[in-house]
Structure formats: structure tokens, C-alpha cells
Image 1: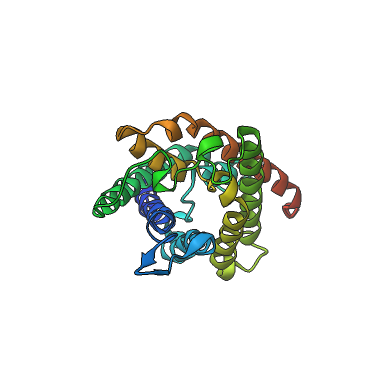
Image 2 (image 1 turned 90 degrees about the vertical axis):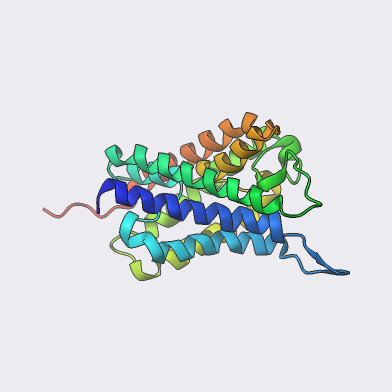
Length: 242
């Protein structure tokens, strides 16, 4: 497939990740039907993010590799699994997909007459006032670096030619679910700069710029974590045959 075709697949996949993951958080995490709370809660949101990756792994994995995440692309480059020259277009299209999904999510939310736009809307990532548990910047940075590093280590291991490739999508999707279960209270879980950019940018364009002012952390930390994992996994690569 051409680089443009693969990048378009990344756009669609990242669009689905943000719409499904952030959409579940914004629309269904807390939902009342009459007097009954039938919201999906933290557990449901974590599974929603995992399911977006799981479904797209089998939908576009054979087309683009299903990165859906600039940090994954960077980690695969560092790990020697992806050509550095293809990375910029992948990252651009992933980010565009996330932004389009965030715009659509806001449009859906505005269909509810009781919806009020806030700095924390659209399941944005953040620290301090934007952290669900009010965790600070340093804690958020540490968590995002570690969680992204573990996510990339899972991806690199599952897609290793020595592994069981047909089950990679399941392991990666469940890995992302576990990461969300751990870190939603801290940063609302990013481990994905594109996922963070879409909601933050859309909120800023609508007068709520706090998430955009914190966006640097959700590019820096995931890319550092991904680079660490990519470098470490090289230690486990099979030696080249003579």
C-alpha cells in the first residue's frame, strides 16, 4: 500500500479511537435513565478505549499496522520496526483523525439541551484542575511516561515475529484497557498525543483553553516513554543469523 493509503487508514483508525474512547467517557460514563444510573463508569470507559484498538487492529492492521498514536509510531521507529521517513505523515494523519472525532463528539454533545461546555469536557487529559483525582504535573508526567513505555513494550512483544501474531490485537487492546484502569484517575489517560490534541484543540477553539495549555505534557511524556520502550526492546531482539 502507498504511504498515503496507509496514512488514511491511520486517520480513520484514530478517529474511531477518539470517538469511541472519549465518546464513551463524555456520553456514557455517567448516564441517568429516570432514577436509574446506567452509566458505564470508569471500567466501561477503560474497556471502550481497549475495544477501539482491538477492533481497528483487525480492521486496518494489515493496511497500516494500526498505530493510531504518534507515540506508537515513534516507539516503533526507535525499536527498528518502522521507517523513520514514513513517521511524519502517519503522525499528521493520526492527529487530524483525532481532531475530526473531537469536533464530531462536541456536535453530538450539543444535541443535549442541558450540555454546558467546561474546561474538562470531551474527556480531555490534564493535571491539577483537569486531573480527575487532582494529581499534579510531576505525577502526571511519571504516569504517562511509564504507562506509554509499558504499552509500547506490549506492542513490540506482541508483534514480534517470534510471538503469536494472530492474537496481537487482543493483547494490545486489553493492555490499553489495563492502562486506563490504572491511570484514568491521574490524567484521564493519554498515552497518545493525538488523542490528547483533538479534545484540547476543539475546546480551545470554543473558549476553553486550559487543556491546550497543558498539552505539551501529553506529547512529551508519551514520546519519551515510547522511545524508552523501543530502545529497551532491542535488547530482546533475536540475534541476526550468520
